[in-house]
Image: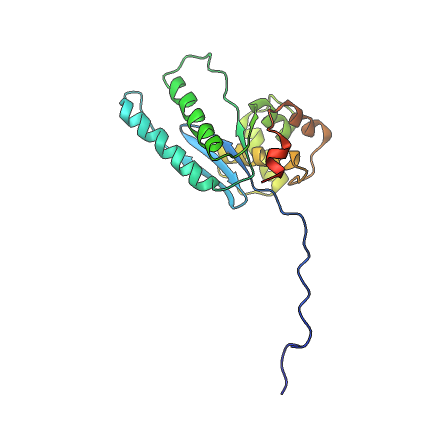
Length: 197
């Protein structure tokens, strides 16, 4: 009887290489939180109004936090863009800070190591300049990673994830030395806390 397979010879085992670290990037925002994980890059858009009640504002932040945690799942490291300066007056200052802490606190409660990446470091890693605008970061992310990204929120999240992977020795792509220098300006967790997971 003829068969298509040689049943006497066992299949060769798949080559075992190092596991790609499960890193997520989070660009936390009230209007569009960008999330990048091994599964892909997405965004949680929401809308609010200046006259929203306290309960409506709380419900909005709870919704964003729940969606973010669902997308993140179990990861080895979360790379979160640090809060921007809130010296500029605005009605949503408390809400932005509250949302940031709500998400970061939830990650820490899950015992997920968190890295805080300043916006200027994120821009420098992507473009070589910490002063680059979000549109430049979006174009750089599309070009370097070949990613289909619809918004700068998603681009920021992808760059944050790429920075975490690079810090762990698993860069998504080669970047020039000047870009790589941005890693030094971030608040990274203890490396053992990440690699031991």
